[in-house]
Amino acid sequence: MIKSMTGFGDASDQIDGMKYFIEIKTVNNRYLKTSVKVSEVAAFMTDEIDKLLRSCINRGTVNFSLKIQSASDQGLFDIDENTIQAYIKKLTTIAEQNNIDTRIDITSLLTIPGVIQPALPDEQQAEKVRESVITMTQQALEKLDLMRTQEGKTLADDLIANCDAIAQKLDIICQKSPLVVQEYHDKLKKKVDDLLAAARLELDSETLAREVAIFAEKCDIAEEITRLNSHLAQFKAFCKENTNSGRKLDFVTQEMLREANTIASKASNELICQSVIDIKCSIDRIKEQVQNIE
Image (tube, rainbow, N blue to C red; front, side):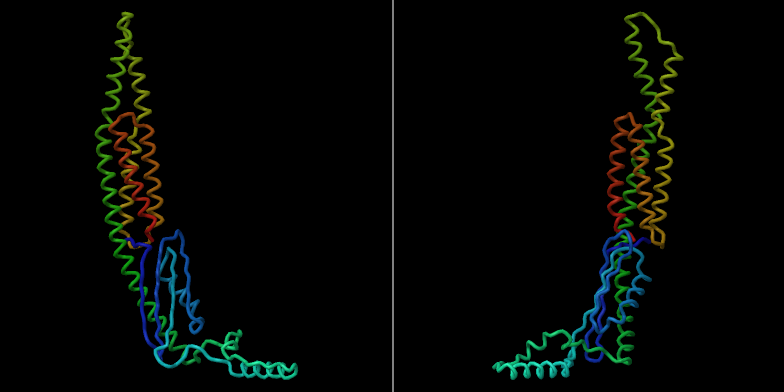
């Protein structure tokens, strides 16, 4: 069954006094585009997370975020005390040499680049964090997949309903199409007979037959109807596949529209023209929905 490209999944866990929150959001995109945002504590996992996302998702924009909060008094950062001591010593020396009466603001020192560093885990902690984050990511991906699958089913039902509507209009066109030539023959004959009646002339039956044959060839839409019916069958089959059918469905939709336009250009009957308009409206709805299919 087809899947939607729009979805959301999340997961959370607590590791050594730290709370980890993962969110995965996906939206439409013609190609696959991933964005992985993690704190510096888990920055070493960025590539691994990206590979995991790409192995599970084939198309769409994927936004992954990992947030960390402290669940205890343990901080998420370290202060480089040696660097602060060096700044204080240097500033004190400069003040004494220049007879400057100054007070050093410790808060200002904390804003100096390099003074505050993220509390990076050691090798053992890093491995524990990696295993937990990967597990949480898989859990979030499962939720995401469930949501995309459920929405995909809704999309499939709507797409098939539109295909059925197109098929109904094609049936009307099929029934009306053979009568168009006969109607043209009768109208043409009546019009010519009326014009020739005053001149007391008769129309050659072969000439009338030739004109009708030319008209019949120009307005023949049997091939277009057959191809459009074939495209409808292909479209429905792709909707039931378990593979990623978004691009296939997009291509078939374009072909459906092309056949509908050809029928419209050949149509010379009001009922057929109205049916083609209804068909193109259904195809437009299909095109809009297909853009959200993986």
